[in-house]
Length: 468
Length: 159
Image 1 (cartoon, rainbow over the protein chains, first blue to last red):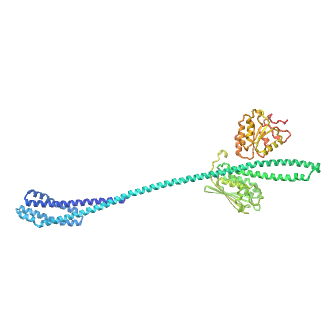
Image 2 (image 1 turned 120 degrees about the horizontal axis):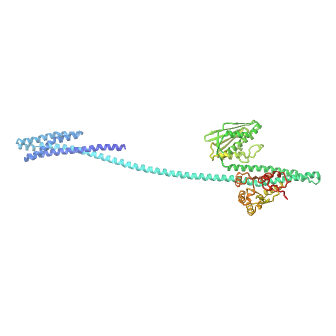
Image 3 (image 1 turned 120 degrees about the vertical axis):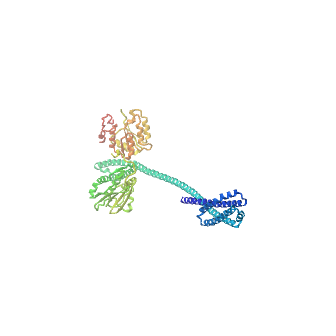
């Protein structure tokens, strides 16, 4: 833009210069024409004596000094022209005097003398010099004019070039912008396409996981439920057998008193020892199996239960859970300390299940050799709360750190009774709450569970009716 | 209105049915027991009951039947002209809340979890005011089976 303005300003200057040169050429030509007219008129008069020639001479001769002055003023800026005009001025003055002198001679009646003066070389020489110089002046102006024209052409070409460049640049910019917009649109479409593909992939996978999970839950339910059918028969008919055994025992007791000889010792052994022993084992086993099936069913049911998010006062919840363990704690001389516990918005039942089981385990597996210490604390970490349940109990060996979470698996000495379901419930519930559970433990020193839960569970809120 | 003294038992597991019958008898309940192994058989039998006297005094339904859900049988009973007035006790082998909710929705509040404790069953029967035919000397369970309304249907000694 600046270039265009500069070019514009410059071309303005050049046009003025060109105009001046043309004007100077005109002034120079005009002066020469006038001088020639004056000369030829003067000669015409002298030769013919016709006064019309004299009138013509007088009209032109009077304008000659002014015409020359104009030319001088117009070309005064150029030193070369000034020199030429100085010559022209001096030759003109001589020529003018010569012409007026000749006319004075003629007026005085010396017509022959006047004609002789006109015929002399002097007049021709002066006129020739003036013509030469005038041609020089014109040539100089011609050169200036040509230079300006050339420059003007170059400015024109530069301007044209600049204009073409600007237009071309515009085109290039336009096409680049167009291309860029096109490609960015294409990219956006591609990104949104691939986003869409990813989303649908995620949705498919999520649906698949949900389906598999549902199937597992359903499977667990069916297994639990249908295993219980035969078990009920075993429990029921074992009871029938126990009843029958009691009747037999009663009969044997009667016979022992009345007819001992009738009694086969093998029958007595069978009724008094073998059958009761077998029934005892069957009863214990079926009772245990019943508990295990109930555990599977409970896990399945907990997994299928719809979670409800509600605000939970964690300090109150943990205090309540600790109160449930108060008796065991007291009898073992153990102490429980509850630190700061940030509140949660989560599913109350699941949270109770988690901390209830962890607390119960901590109490259950305290080391009888030392005073039990259980600590529960928590802290906020951004949008997650991390709770810790620490004990100085018997600890869990590193090799068992995964096994303890499996259903029906238990680690360490088995003298403490249990089904091996507590930690399976805990882990299952924490996963459902979008949480993480980590365990660190040293055998003989204690165990530390880290429970990392979202501060606000993404689940439907519990209606007040249910809360009440 | 009087009903027959028949107890209809819908139970696919022969063992469970046998245990139920044995224990019922042992507790001095002598009502005739009509046992069906499938829901369809039970529904078919009910469909041909044409008078109130034909309707059983009690339905005992297992929730899990091979051909249809116990709750589906319950739904059939609920719309039957005579059988809908007959009390129902549901039997289940697990304390599944969803099953219980379905029963409640169909108007049945009595579900017992197996293995059946007979005194609970008799209590439920008393609660339902259904006519159990009790042997007066049979067992202490009889003491629990009082009819709160004092209905003449309450205790009919077996002839």
